[in-house]
Image (cartoon, rainbow, N blue to C red; front, side, top):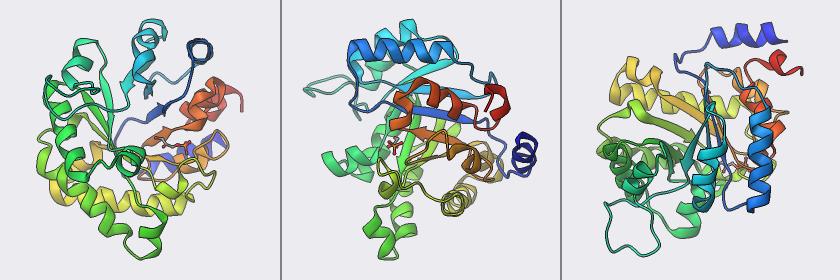
Length: 267
Ligand SMILES: O=C(CO)COP(=O)(O)O
């Protein structure tokens, strides 16, 4: 099985390092976060991939101090401007100051529940990059948009402000997260995900050139589990995952981190 997966991986179009993100969303107590970090620390993740966990703001500092170095930390959001009179917001400058290297921007929950526009996502992504953070920028269509035949129009409209504002793509990971797959248990089929990832790769190629496009991680999110990750990981334009629910279970998340080397964790 592992050799078949490796064979498929060898055919990949992307030269990018595998990337797994865990988005803990608005979940956890100090006790559950301590247990999760202990479980993650007990697991082995491949040394040649990037793994980033995004706890709620209030736990980030504790996690950063207590998680092993195989895992980096991310914030789930940041403000689009430097420090100032923005009650309730956390600036990219503060994340940088607190030693947080990554931030997630444009998650669909922020777009849909909090009204964040693609324009705002473009601005905050560019600002976070300018400050020196690395960014996981999220895009993805709703079921209504997909069913109305607007899948690629939606992706184009979400990518456009990123293309207009981002100057340096070397610290950007793009997460394709179809909204209909998030938290629903309805994972995109490998073919469905690959089709959109290939489209995104082409958009990156057209805009940034082939070499840059192949080095940018395009990761998939939406009901990824330790049961479906291996097949998704064989798709040529899937460079990793952004995991929600399953990232709250240490052992499952570690298995997802090993999606391209399942034998290493005894599956
Ligand atoms: O939104 C997600 C990650 O950012 C995906 O969430 P689930 O893995 O719970 O579907």
